Length: 361
Image 1 (cartoon, rainbow, N blue to C red):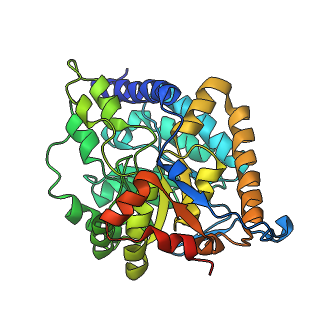
Image 2 (image 1 turned 135 degrees about the horizontal axis):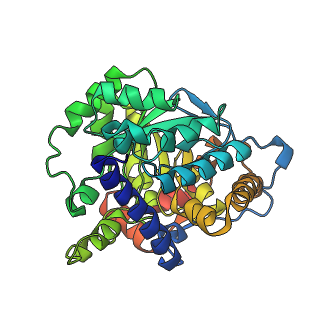
């Protein structure tokens, strides 16, 4: 028999998938990634065979700088979504993150909807996912369930505030994050859920022992809008679009991250291989996407998602060829043009956008 807890979590998870797919279909074509351009160097091209997609982040070695970011789990439907995502990750050879495992920690009966990530992807890099309220014991349970190679801790104050049944006290999060870092035996990644990480947040996380941060900026799935759609009066509409974009976060936080030895991941609003390369050029060690891949899986099926992931990896490599970069790290020395609101954001944060246009010198 399905428990009341499972029904509550399952209903919410199904709502999230349904609303996220609908939101993705209606989102504007443009976002702040379009305000990042490259200075074209006509004779910079290199040999595709010499280009490596391997990337390193705080001791982790990934063969590619692309990953499927956290999405779902906790209901029969979302378990099938996870199955498709896991198959696609396996076939394309990309890391994959579980969605929040709070439903499993509340009711172990839904374990199969998460365990499928490892069952279908036995040799892949898989990340467990918990919220900042989780205890080390709960985090270890989540890690063990899917034999996770790393742990994501998601922080999501805006989503929780708008969520009708969400948390309202976040004061213990820093202390709990530090306890999780200390209490698990796998690398820890702290991520936002689409509202961005500032340089101050990255510095604070470094002080807590975190060595990998996913800035997860706005421009992709908007969980303020999703949770507002679940409210009877939809009275938090004014928070739609809250936060900073992934590219703004990278520009803001990369110097602080380097100072503290923190590796940054970029996600939020990633639409295509060029967006991946843009984020890598701004200092991300790897780039994740969720809504784009979920929409393809739901509308076209797992084979289409495998084809998309494979094509993205090929095109990322080919864009690196055009830019004359043999490694992911080399992209941070390319000349990048910051324009529009992104350039204004940079200036307001005390960063000279012109410096990005003269990096190759």
